[in-house]
Length: 88
Image (cartoon, rainbow, N blue to C red):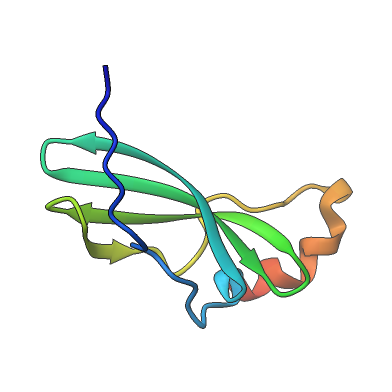
């Protein structure tokens, strides 16, 4: 069985274009004392992508990607095209 402990807010939105409206729905994997977190990042206009950060200890954010690790890139996702240029 997995024990779950609520720790409160670990990540908050930043001024980065891809996550300036919100960060939600984290998925984490722990390797030793390192926690890798992938999360839904929301930009203005409700445009979503996936962000990444690395935590140690396991609650201290020691690395946070300045660009999304997954983002819309196909023709049917055109509405995101203008943001993609800013993220790269």
